[in-house]
Amino acid sequence: MSAPPTAARSAQGHGHRPHRNFRLLLVGETTSKLGISVTSVLLPLVAVTTLHASPFMMGVLTAAPWLPWLVLGLPAGAWVDRLAPRPVMLVCNAVSAAVFVSVPVTWWLGALTMGHLLAAALIEGAASVFFSTAYSSYLPLLVPRGELMGRNAQLQAGDQAARVAGPGLGGLIAQTAGGVPGLLLNAATFLVSSLCLMAIRGAAPRPAPAPRRPLAREIADGLRFVTGDPWVRAVTGFGAAVNLAMAGFQAVQIVFLVRTLGVGSDTLGWLVSCGGLGGVLGGLAAGRLARRLGSARALLVVQFTAAPFGLLAPFAGPGPRLGFFVAGTVVMFAGVVACNVVIVSFRQAYCPPELLGRVTATTLFLNYGTIPLGALLGGSLASLLGARTTLWAVTAALIAAGGFLLVGPLRGLRDLPGAPATEG
Image (cartoon, rainbow, N blue to C red):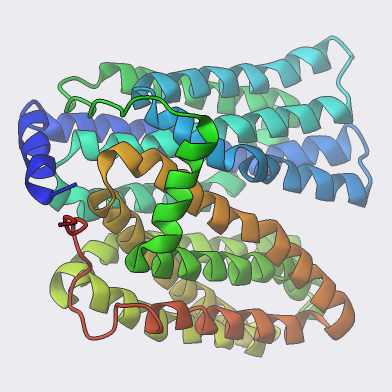
């Protein structure tokens, strides 16, 4: 797919209120992410306090939203490429809202069970698979290709801000309204997201899908593109390795803070939120760094400048030495989010539009598939070696993840390519 037709589609489709359309998308997405962040506190709280779930069941509940990626991640890309993205997103929002309404309704009827919570987490996770895949295909229809970096940076900053505010808001809602009724807030955020999507006008027309073929062949097209293209292969391997390391870090950080350092619950919340604050800063800085350094150089500079700061976290101790944890997590998370902005923007501009859903689903399948593995490895290492030693290991692994960028074709380049070369 050559670059000029893509540029022509962008110019044609973005002439009608592009900034208004993006603002609507940003407000809807940030609102729903805030609801999801609140739910990340409320759902486990309901399981523990209302249903008295065992530690094993809590682990299952934590893993449940990610499991659909392992089952549906690849076929979701092929299905989304056959459909218009906005209707897919609206259906996913409706399903997610209904799921979170069902929990308080069942509780009020006296029939809430742990099985219901697990089913809710699985169904919402499945909806998230399709929503995330369609969403990545929808953004290039709303904004010109040259603005993708800046717009993705704003979306990432909103996402991280929601992650910072969500846990505290979730605790406040649990204290005032109760954990189960508080889940209605998440249902309302999906409604806001849908209203914003329905208000968008003048998006670029979606490219006509290719004639349908067997699902397995369409999935294979996405896999072949991701594994065969050197640029996409390098950033996908990097993303999977980063998620592996970060999942291990997040699985151990609370154990480290509470049991190793003796941090109280009043301090724990804001220490954990420091990562989200770093993510906000990284999202805001990503576009500026990419413009100043070039997207390829920015990816390398950010990774090898920010990731080593993670090594400060294991130096933390009681009192003023908690500053090591704060500085390490703020800069480390800022680097992770900034790199993610660059990679997502590259993928949206580079991949052929008719393949974007499958390529997105394949990369997310590979990237998200390492999250439960990283959490399991982090927990196992902490049991064997202790939390502090495990933090050394996972932060070192985060630095090593940059090797995927060094062995790929990025070295010596200023910018990542904006569109694949046309085959002769």
